[in-house]
Image (cartoon, rainbow, N blue to C red; front, side, top):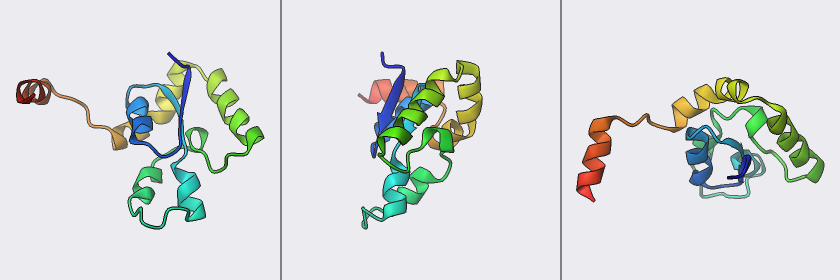
Length: 105
């Protein structure tokens, strides 16, 4: 029920993005500072993130600025901004795949 989801290094943030939830993703923090040396897919997670939804620092002013930008952004503009990200990071479900998963479980 939150208006903005903040995720530092979790695929759950990408799931929230695919559901059109306003998100701020922290993958670039780890990509830029080489804090995680054995995470080769970090570049993949950063590849299509827009600057408006990605964190490069945990500085309080910087974080508050990111939150305020997203809070002020209307839903239509957010959907447009993140369209390419959602397309890259999530797969649109099809009824056939959905039914297969239901019956498999």
